[in-house]
Each structure stands twice: as structure tokens, then as C-alpha cells.
Length: 90
Image (cartoon, rainbow, N blue to C red; front, side, top):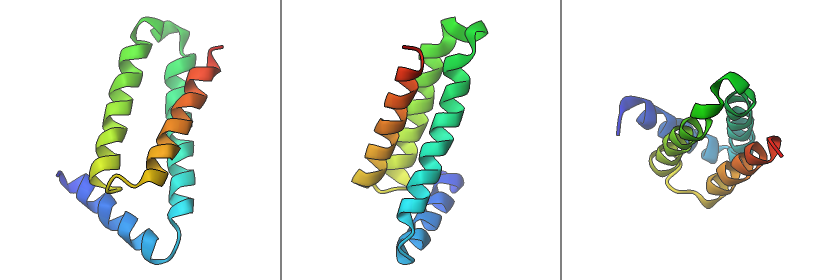
């Protein structure tokens, strides 16, 4: 685990101790939606959109496993945010 993920894991632990994981999930969802929307709506990069989104999802999966200890609530947050991104182009 790299130092960034370890630090993020420690922050997650602190949030859980003060019953603030919901705030952290909301912030994660907003981050995913904003970052992903930039990928999805950039028509100049249409040909790279799918690979960019897959790389983004892989990095989030790593954060989920290492920093959120595979917490189901964070898994649902990531899944819901990506569903939102997929529906942007419909």
C-alpha cells in the first residue's frame, strides 16, 4: 500500500470514529461525478472515454479495497456515482 492510500485509510478511520462516514461518502460521490463528468462530456476525447473511465474505476476500486477496507457503503457510493456518469450521455 502506498503512502497516499495509507494516509487516506487513517483519515477514513478518523471519520468513522466520529460517525462521519456519510459525509466522506458524499464527498467521494461528488468527486467521482465531477471528475467523471469531465471525461464523459468532453467530445474531443470521445475515443478515449471508455478507457479513461475504466482506469478511473480501477483506481477507485484500489482506494475502496485499501483505504475503505471494502466497506459496502463506499462500494454502493462508487457504483451509484458511475451509474450517474453512464446516464449522462443518454
